[in-house]
Image (cartoon, rainbow, N blue to C red; front, side, top):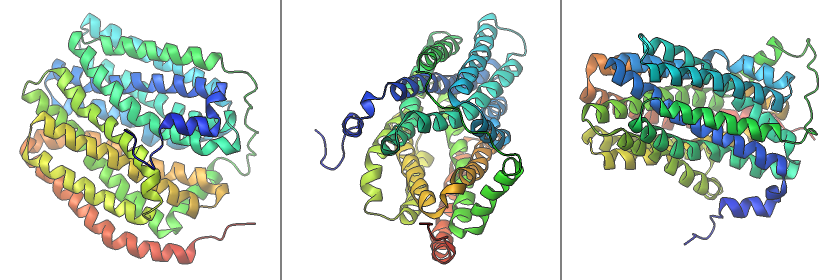
Length: 423
């Protein structure tokens, strides 16, 4: 039964005419398939390192390798996306990712010595492909759809992550349970599928206009940073989002280590972590209804408190069903948070600096994800599982309380300093 006010994704696509856009269907389906494979190996990488070394610290380093490119390549990737043909760059990204995951598959199957060091390198390469490919996909979607179709197309882009998390994590852990190199082989197949769809996209996709040296590069980057810094809510929410990303990364590795130490099968781990995908899909379905009734700033603050509440059962129980339910909620709240912040950013940031400002904020958030993955390994090694549970709960509660006071003040300041829309 469908609840009134929550249209299905298929209905939204049909109403916008997007289902007749051949280039978009090819682009989205290929990219989504590739993303499913990537999320599958994001689970397989730490599971394989844990099995090979027994060290949560080593698993934390693998998490860092997967996420570090989001810190060091975010701004260069934006420059590449602005100055290159998006589809052609996406194709090159798929070839590079295919080579990296192929090396990982062969190394795992051959039981090579110092395997975790090889995986460290391949994980870093795949993480880099994810950063460059994600920005180019955003640009490519703008290229292949009309202006009227863009809102629906970007909604489908937002839905890619929870769908890929749901399918990728569950299948990645399940096929890892069959044999440890199989998730990497499945990932290679996803890269190949994406290559096929990208290559049959019609060639009328435009190339970007050349960027003038005087207005590009460093000036563009500084403009984006300046916009974020001068608007109090953007500045404060970016800081809080980065810190909350660290907490969520600790929770992610905490779940992995808890289930591994309690000797649950790999498919159980996949189902628990894949629950975030279910939550994300539900969150995406509810986002338009909620944002029409609650202001983005209030929804953002409520999301932080919702995360805090969801961490309470996780601090008290190791039951996979409890962990899955809470992780599902965390995934749904995460999508709602992203939608709320996106709506605010589009309204508050001048259009000509929007993407540069988003890149600056993404740099902070992705860097926090990388730092969180490394922090998780050291925290679990030094403190153990139970103290880590209560540490993440206390940290999220502190962030929610800070946001409740500081973002309310920042919002008032933003209304005074927000630039007027040009006519």
